[in-house]
Length: 475
Image (cartoon, rainbow, N blue to C red; front, side, top):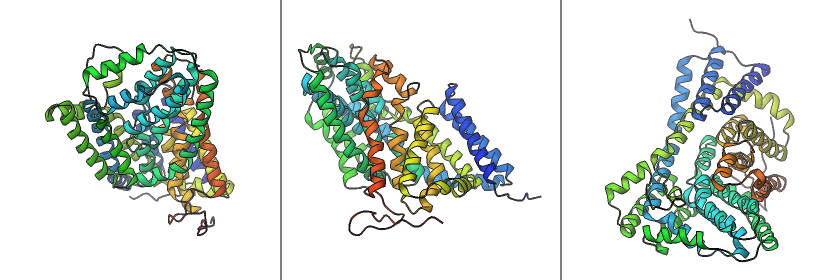
């Protein structure tokens, strides 16, 4: 006998949603793997769906559709892993490190730490990788100067997470665009409106801080050791940076993400074989398993041994399970009830909407121990209907997810990202107040909402300037 499908009440919807969040937060804070935690959250969501009389067949069909829609993002993530492994083997990342360190002097080290960490993270798509490569080099050099180490670390972290937010290779960038159903480069273009002005202000602040607290002599032995090691293990050339520049060009010309990433992988493989003499079979193994080398210098090896498809397996697992959880939650209708009966009663304009989205991201991230992926997923699932109903394009939502969800990870004192930074760079949490870029971005996010600059309606029409469009009224 077929059960009658029930419409969730407001109380049931809120209780169900809070239960799912509580399960995620408790499990993650207990140290349970993120993928497993989200899987259990999905199981709870299935239980809620069945309690509402939704058939298993309907649930399964919804899951199949969502997984099918997510396939392009899965492919991009796989190619990102391949690209990082190839870039390491081909000398692209080592070249970025090598030539970057040649520019360093005490007077410009702080703003340069921000800029070079940003570039490294944008080109590699990983904040953790940027911290462990360029960040480690910057802090090592800073230790031979009069500069404040927490200040330098704050600049490194700010730059590393700028790239994590903006890079088409980043897991969070792909996650935010994927769950919001916004094309990758539309998402990146939207983020320019809050990221670029914040970056400019941050550079000025870091430059002033570095000038005030910097100066003195510098023992460049550590940086020289790193550069010498890189020279001994790679054929250095400025041309090695071309594959990294290609990533930016693909973004600028808005080439389809899969096609653009595939082209970059092919070109990067060609450069690796041409400049480093890496064999095709060996290079393909690096693309899958990640690059591996023993230079004999302990500080350098961790910088280089990374990448590969295998390094992306956890992210793929998280994304797939999160997609399933989101699909089941959507099928229950509880988010629609929350949006219509709760959120829309308080959110009457885009300023309150964006502000509430930011705060919600922060709350989830702090509760989930810096779980930026969880913050992005949960916030998107909560607010997507509200953005649609208010006639505001989802690329504003996807941007907001990263303005707070991605960027807040390294400022959660008990978070995974913060612990990673403290461990790799041998510093305590005193660096957090110096992460100025991270604090500036949400300010510009709210300013965009107030002025309408960088806000589009659901048709993609801009809501500023002479031909500005208006958002639809709330129903």
